[in-house]
Each structure stands twice: as C-alpha cells, then as structure tokens.
Image (cartoon, rainbow, N blue to C red):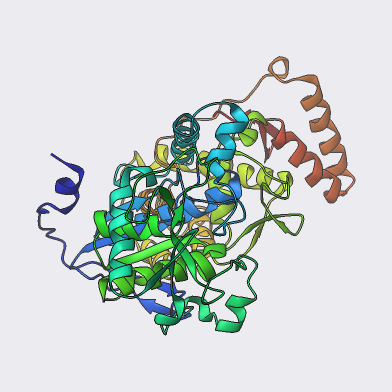
Length: 486
C-alpha cells in the first residue's frame, strides 16, 4: 500500500468519542486559539526540515522535538496525525537569499563528492538524531526537494499564468505587490520587510521583498533542470509549497518551524500558495524560539555550534537534551550550557529511578486519577511542558496518590513528553573500584562542600560529575553514584 493510501485511507472509527480540546498559540493571529482541524479527527502537519549540507546542530533539533510534542498531544487527544518534514537538497542559498551559491553545492565541493552524496549522508545523520531524541518518525514523510522538481515548476508556471510572477535574466520572481496581504505572518509591515537582513538589491526587481521562484542556472551550478524559463534550479521557498500541495493538500492544519523562518520564508510560502490555490494555506502557524549559547543564537555562521554527537561523546543520554528542551515553553528562548544539560540529565535520571520504583510498587497496574487530568490539561494548553513536568514531579513524590494512580500518570507522561519512563531498568549502585579516580575525588570534594554548607561549590561539582557520565543521588546513608546508560 502506498504512503498516501496508508495516510489518507479509511480509518477505523474510534469508539471513545470526538477528540479532546487542544489550544495552540497561532503566530498568524498572535493569540491562543482552540484547535479545530479541517477534517474531523484528522490533522495535517508540515514542519520545515533541514538543509542537508552538514549535520543539524542542537538549536535546529529543538524545532523537531517541538513538532513531535505537538503530534504526541494531538494523538493523545484522539486525532489521526499526518506529517511531512521536507529535506532541502537544492535551492537554499548561502545567506538565505536569492543569489549566491547553493549550500549543497558548497558542501559537495568542499568534500569533493556529488550533491547526492552530501545530501544522503547528512539526511541519514538527521534521521538518526531524531531517533536518538525519541521523535516518532513512523507517521512522517521526508520528501527531498529534488524529488519534486516537476511540482515546483508547475506551481511556478501557475503563478506566472495568474499574473503573480515576472521574468528577469536571472530567474522568475514572485511579485509581492500583487498579493495585498503579504507579510501578514507575525505582523510584518512593508517597511520592516524592506529593512530585513535577507532582502537583497537585485537589478530589475519590482519590489524589495520580491523573491525568486525559479533561478536561471549559473556555470558553476552542480544541480540544474530544464524548465519553461530555461535550465535552472528552484528557489528555496517554493519547495515547501509544492510538497505540501502534493502530499498534504492545498489547505493544511498546522505548519511549524523556528521563529527565524516566520518573517521571510513562511510569508513567502503563504503568498505563493494562496496566490496559486485561491484559498487559505495554513490555519495554525506555530514557531519555536531560539536556543542560545552565551546570549547568542546557536549558528554555524557564529561558530558556536553543538551537535547531538558532542552530547553523546560527553557521556550524556541524548534524551537529556529532550528533557532540557521540555523544561522551557517552546515560545521561550532557551540558553544552553553544559551545566544546564547536566542538571536536566540528573533530573531525568531521578525521574526514571522513581518511575522504576513506582512500577515495582504498583505491579505496573494503572488507575485513573484527577492529577492525570491536570497533566493532560497542561499539555493541551499550548504545550505547557514546564507546568506538566511540575505536576508530574509533585504527584509522583506525593503520598496523596496510590502507586497505581502514579503509574497511570507516568504512562500519560511517557506518551506525551516522549520520555521513556515505564520500561527503564533498575539503576545499579557502583562499587568504588568501578568508579574512575577523578570522579571519586569529585564526589569526596562535593561531600566536603556540602558539610561546610558551600552549596554553590557542591552544585558545581555535581555538574562536573554529571558531565563525566555519572549520576549522584543523596540518600539517607550518603551519596549513591550510578552510571548513565546510553
């Protein structure tokens, strides 16, 4: 059975009634709204994927944990979810503009391989990173831009025939003045768009915000195709519109991405899609905030990148990063540091240890409780993950709930947060001979700091122990050290 048949074929009726209410902040309106899908119980979601000229860094990965959390919440609310995350393997210029050189071509030339080799290599790394972060990819289609060249040409041709595009020697451009509501996403005005860093001065452009739909090939272009406008390659923005149109339909429910994409890339998607289709393109636009290091956005251009592989090499479980992301609301900028990651790793280790004990006490039997409802309300209220984690922690440590009620809550948390909680092996206490001398020394110094009430030094040493791949719990008989397993 084809992917489209699987995704859009008949679904079994769910006897549990209509989906639960979910609220999302819509970037288009700037306010929190009740989510209503276009088709009963079915949700279509598109997420802007990576440009695969290099490995995705952890700032990029926040967007995919975010979109995965949306999908988990909607599934938990009894929706059937269809998702597409594109893979950009052509068309994305350095600087995100309309001129310059394609990022894939640059990567291919640097590594002395073909663009196909570069794209395949880094796409695999990206999918592996998603798997390591426990992102559910079973219902996601990952189309490559080069697989949809015909569809991009057809969309550009439609825009030209409808009078929304004009031709220049270097390519076919979308005329933003012909689309009166251009810039509506995020309240971008004409003045602010003209002042944007990615607005280029190109000879012959009618308006500063006009963007390329199809680019005329240059001699050094490694990827080019025939088109009604001659040999060339697609602009960056049109691939998303063409793939959404082909795989999800002309009108979809949710489109996600990082907040940096809203002002230009996503406004361009809206303009070309609605101009071509004559109908609303996306009903709910959702954007996650930046991940920063030292007050600056994580960016390859700034040279401050951290990869998931770096986190693993330092002895952290990749899911520590997922927990770290969930500690903040998706629309809140988040600052990464190794100490902060160590704190998240410690919290996840403690949570899993408590979950294991609850599983033993409850014999892995669950019961309903009021607190499970509170947890779900928080998750369905615009992904209030910090509040949901607080409810989870307070409840599993409380004596007001039975082990069975706590186990039921843990099952809900595992499903909605994407954290493994109900099938985690019991932690094994390490013998002194199993612990490296450097870690033992830090443990001794930490105990001395705690005894002298130097809690700042004790917290710093705890972070260093966590960064070394170990977890310390303060028990009634002294510290208990366990090694994290990846």
